[in-house]
Length: 289
Ligand SMILES: [Zn+2]
Ligand SMILES: [Zn+2]
Image (cartoon, rainbow, N blue to C red; front, side, top):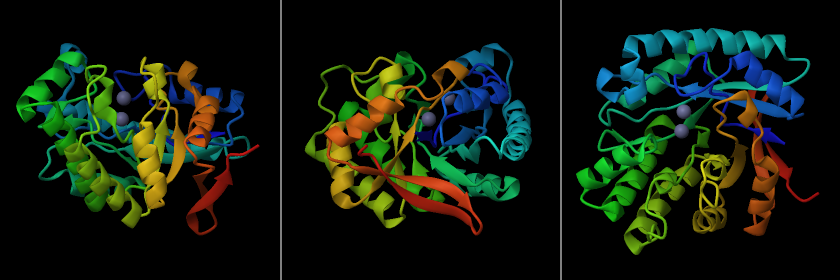
């Protein structure tokens, strides 16, 4: 098994715990064949800081410093561990502010020579949608309702894919985390926006993150939902696993269940990334035993 989205650590992320070394040791102990570490990109402006960061006196300058330290430490560990674990070095994008984030994400990738990107959208109307239920409600109000928020979110994912061209698209239906249980998140309008995002993923050869944090955070399913898995699979878009770990104990969480989830929804292989002689390579891995 492998995970290509995760490895957030308390060393470089306020809302994670453990060191990156401890995360990697957990991946070795779990006998994963490859582990992608994808720390959050620094946010661009103090107004995007999360409340716990603000309470601790963070400024974005600190996020930038920590990200540079992450870049160095992930490179050091990638080299040091090359005999025992294939580490892929990446980061998870932010998509705020909407007008200018893409160039800064691409610049971070170039400057630090990351192997790959996980493209994620965590904000709608510049409000974080996965941080707290209260912020999610504020984002819904700012969009004038849940359906417009969902539609807008998928449009942002589509734009992010076209401008950042990430190898992996993170947690495709993230807004469901704090949406009211039982809400219809698959209306015709939402579905059209989701289809456009999936079409962008197909045309840019993105892999979708089958992200087990949905289960870890108490949802009955991972990201994305079965209807999106089916849509993506029918469009020819591939999947890979992500544990979205924010602590050593979360490394590898739910990967066996995720494999069965894909099989249950008629996806019989994943696409893994690996570092070959000529750079990043894709490899089809069958899920059937
Ligand atoms: Zn995080
Ligand atoms: Zn994320």
